[in-house]
Image 1 (tube, rainbow, N blue to C red):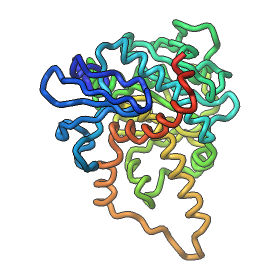
Image 2 (image 1 turned 90 degrees about the horizontal axis):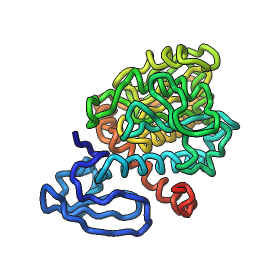
Image 3 (image 1 turned 90 degrees about the vertical axis):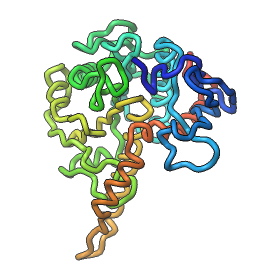
Image 4 (image 1 turned 180 degrees about the vertical axis):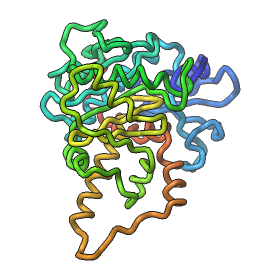
Length: 325
């Protein structure tokens, strides 16, 4: 079964993040030209792009495709390593807290996650630990993993199943997860509410935020399963009250990382706006039809992936290839 993040056509170049790289490759199914520049591909076949309506010009950005699942595994692991580095650069790392993972495309009943104590800023794809979806048990890697990581991630992958376009997958399936303790999101998680629709960016999360009551530290699969039970197929994020945020990638790790970053910026904007209100003042809320239209435009899984592209390009430049080791 093919997918936009698997192998839609066999001869497409796998994007490996070489800045400035440009190639033209003939599709096996038609004559469109597919190119790569920086870390994302683009095409002259405008109708094939999920971004056709929001971009202008002679080309459109498209999702990456791969010649094999092994090639996709490399891409996913490298982008997971980059996601850690990006999150660190923007202040989302806190002590040993935080864990991010991506499902393995070759062995989809497993996932890759960070070892506890490894710096987000120095993460490499070879540092990642492979765990089993069924129970979170470590299958490959010597370093220890945060018990909350194996508990939450394994039970989320188990409950949700595979993502859209994958064999046996669905719109509500999960391919990646991100959980960190960023400052404004952590503060916002204590307010017992979801984001208010006071900005364009917040609209991406409209009616797609789960609220999960705090039940102490997460150390076993039972608590991981409890958290997973609150997260439905339409949710982008779960606000873990008095704790932080769990963001979901239905297609990619890039998507999950972007929802985490975007939510933090929206939470910051709402907290700042709340502190600026004069007595008897209220927010100007977006109208429902505009909220839904905006969510449909900027809140897709594809847009989640694409929104992180510039951050990925920057981090690849900083990394100088170290994340690939």
